[in-house]
Image (tube, rainbow, N blue to C red):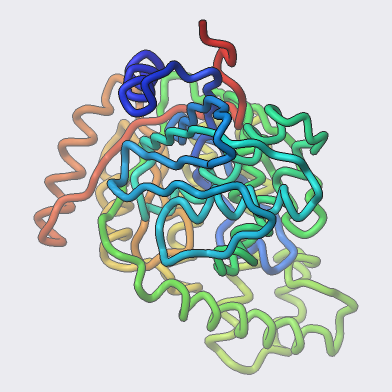
Length: 388
């Protein structure tokens, strides 16, 4: 792959790239819709991601090219930038803008991006682009940011320059990811634990439903409001700041305080899901993939029945997976209403799984999903930076 990218860079710029960087995408293994409730998530970096090849130029111009998109941009070095339309290059321009606002002296760069993350699949292609750009600039211009600084900077770009109100999990996972480790992360405090997650004979199957997630944002805001209502009700008796400050046993003793049955379901999912993340960390550390798989199915069922953010497409993947003895577990991942599901599949059975889940899904939904195989990979880094 690196050789092909270097050839493409040379074709575009008539010179060799001096540096190459890579930032992965991510999936959330378990812990869904609880980051805004003070709970735990468990993302991991995947082996798909964004490559960035760079060579400095003497023109004081930032040149943005991509092998994924036809649109390109040449931007003169200036003190301030604003978002222009919806082009992909807004993500790296936003990062450059943040570096300049922080007072760093930058110079012109010729850049080539290539991502093998499926676009709009919920695997964090935007965070991957932001983080690989921030890491490269920090490395090239010796800006002195820590990895956590780069996470916060990239999230700020997403929220304030791009205008998407996302949390910090995506940027954190693609920056701090480690091979064969999941990150049990508290999105509020940013405390995290790297959990040994050797998948052994299994691989991570990523099943993109290929359904646009049109409902996700409005329903997301609705769920946030319902969780706030549940919290307010529980605070009559409990001194808590978040729903995830209590466990399922404590919740059961106080659930009578929540009189709206829909709000009660939402809170039940959040609190039980937070407990599942803790159990999942133990299962992974003990290399008990059967138990981890059981927790994955339980998470999906809860997201379907209690939180109601799944849908027939994501459910079809989970339904089929339960019939296949080579699958340890499966669940929707991400906001829901489309996007991706994940499954833990025996590596030597992956091709059969891919074919059979595609057939099952197509018969039920009317169009095919896209199925990928991944391992748990490393976070952002340089790939043999000097090329001569």
